[in-house]
Amino acid sequence: MLVGIGFDIHKHSENSELFLAGLKLDGSGFEAHSDGDIVLHALCDALLGAVGKKDIGYYFPSNSKTPENISSLKILEKVLSVIEYPSLKINNIDIIFISQVINVSKNRDKIIENLAKLLDINSSKINIKGKTTDNLGIIGN
Image 1 (cartoon, one colour):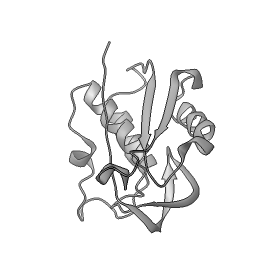
Image 2 (cartoon, rainbow, N blue to C red):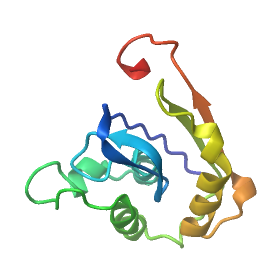
Image 3 (cartoon, rainbow, N blue to C red):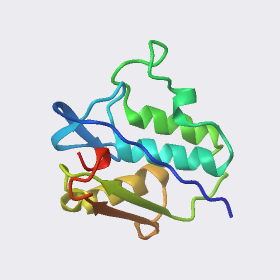
């Protein structure tokens, strides 16, 4: 069994649209070169890590080579190609979403269903948990 761990963090921005797990949701999002979908970015890094590949910054650097505001769905599509999905079976996905600003619980079911659709796996194999840091440090802001 292969295991991958992914992590992503971006500064919250009142001027950005909110994308999570490939969905455009109500609320403000994150400063980023891409669409700032931190759920898909962390998932992509976990998938790449599980098979010993480099991180998404290698395939999509934050410079002029990568189109600004690129959809994280395009990033996921490339990552799935790199890891040779679907020959690689995904057993489960467990996501911890940390934000002092965004409450993920109101969109939890939508996020899980969309990830299940994107990866063609049963939604019972996906979990997402929302956490805050009680305003402690950069992760809490």
